[in-house]
Length: 247
Image 1 (cartoon, rainbow, N blue to C red):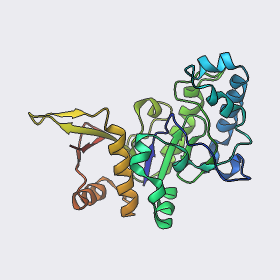
Image 2 (image 1 turned 180 degrees about the vertical axis):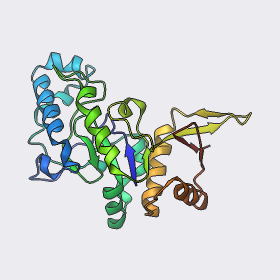
Image 3 (image 1 turned 120 degrees about the vertical axis):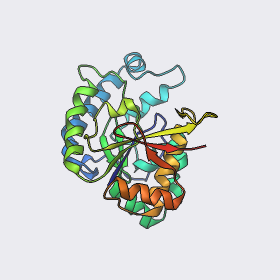
Image 4 (image 1 turned 90 degrees about the horizontal axis):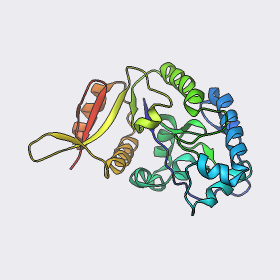
């Protein structure tokens, strides 16, 4: 079983003293060639502040993101699940996980980074800025990642639940047997509508519930049975999708 999460634009500063980026310490080692290419492209574009501002979609108050990229090889590391911040990761609240729950997350959570590809929850990474829509010189992130990640997920086997945004899913589509989790609510007429503002929060809280339960679901039926017992409202959605109904 694997839950695919998106990253976040925002990253927590800091990390463990004396640590620095080591690609061999990251999970999914078959992505090493793509990681090296993405890192080289990011370093290149970040040498020129004006070029980096446009390529990375930065505003006037985000110059610190360029400085982060320039020191990416020497800055300290945090586990990926702690490095990323924002609404989804607030809902997940990794700081409150027990060691046993962290071990489960390491085995069954993958975060899709535009820089590193798939990362396991506790993989140690520096702070950086690169998004799905960033434009690196002479390097298309879609061309770089799409075949490699799709192939990796195809070979994974078992239940894959995709919680990524559509933009990140386009950088590495999950196989046909995977299920995309869509967060919806019901309006006054009972019609289901997609949530926008609370979408990420609901995904974070759902991921936390899966981690706390610690069940490796072999298939969709097992996931639905657990959800019914635990108060998570999961229902079949459009083909290839599962609706998480909230509100």
